[in-house]
Structures are given as structure tokens and as C-alpha cells.
Length: 272
Image (cartoon, rainbow, N blue to C red; front, side, top):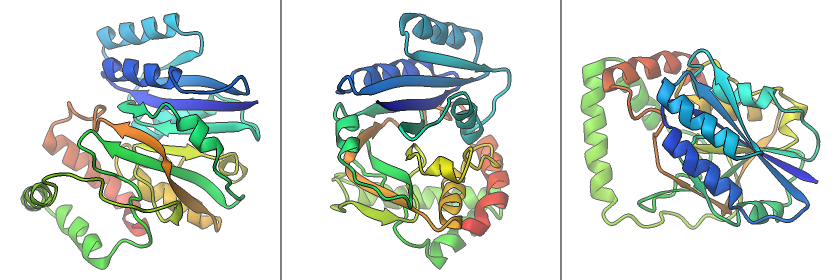
């Protein structure tokens, strides 16, 4: 039997988590597949925690792990990963709680023939507007992009000005917003951080995700983990997920968010 463990973090966003769980429980599967959902709560407020507790009571295959502190993103996911006994038939789907899974997510995943060097599978993540977020980085990040990031984190006000220019350019490019690529299945350098599938081969090399950052920059750290052991991330366009975007950070004010991400940048910049 193949066991699918869906792990997400929740921080004052139980309404998103409710739809996330409903989406998973509606997935098409056979008696040969088992589904469990693990939600790690990052010290939400009492009202949000009450909603989560009700979701756990109503669903036998949903487990809530209560953290007394806000662990951040990958640290929260690791709390969930550590709670599960792993074997060669365990598939870990880790990511945000603002996701809706295509009903054929499991069926299409089981069609994939992946080798031992595939530690991570990046699904086809699509925003509500129809923008595809994978493949995130196919080969290497350009020197120009690296320079932009360095400039962004050199000064808060300069960074915000650069951000506004980038947002305006994206709006001009994305009207209307079509599905932006026709990539087939391929090995890539980096998948988008909202959702990853960790294959059993990942756990032959690592016990957990690299969680040195609180939030942001996880993509670079995970790709470094994969590449450090001579392995790869596989993008598959048939495994589809709708991403409602940034539910976990929507309440963080921009200046606070900037300095959180700047601290993360100090750690992950050498892996860009």
C-alpha cells in the first residue's frame, strides 16, 4: 500500500486549511492508496485553533500538531515529517495550506516512473489567475537576477522601489494571463516553494528539510540539499495544484516581512 502524507503549516488561516483538507479527502484513489493529513499549527490565536480542533475531530485521518511557538515554514513542515514513520511506500506532499489539489493528483503521480536520483518532484502549481509557477528555475539563476536580489536587500527603501517597478512590469506582461509554458516532464534546478513531493529516495539521504531560515529562501536550500548528493528535482506538468497564494503571510506587514526575508537571504544567498 502506498501511503500519502500531506503536511502543511497553519498560522491564523484555518479557513484555508479547511479547504485544503477537503481538497485532499476528495482525491481519487483506490484501496491500494492511503491518505493522511498532518497540519502543524504555528501558535495561532485561540479562535483559529478551535477551528482546527474541530477539523481534527471530524476527520479520522487528519492530525493537528500544536506548536507552542511559531516555527516558520520548513521548521513547521519538519515537525510534521518527524512525526511520521517512513518506509519505501511513503510519499510526502509538503507545502502551504492555501492549495487545492486536482482530483487526479494521486492517479497522475502514480504514473510517474522516477529513478533513485529523483529526491523531489515539483508539481504543476497554477495560480487562480492561471499563471504557472513551475518550473521555477530550470537551470541556473542569472547574474542579473542575483544582482537584483542583492540590490533589493541592500536597503529597505531602495528594495521597495525596485519591488514596485517589478510589480508594474509583471502587470503589463500578464494581461491577460495565459498558461505561460508548455514544458513537459523534465529535471529542473528548483521548484516553487508552495508545494513539493518528497520521494522515498529523499529520506535515504536526509531526515528532514534544511530549515535554517524562518521563512523565504527555502527553495534555494532544498535545491542545495538535492544537488549536494548528486541528485535532482523532477517537474511533472500532469500533477496539478491550484495555489491561492500567501495565505500564511497575508497578515505580515511589509517592513516586518522585508527584514525577515533579509535575515533569510544572508543564509541562502550562496546557494542562488
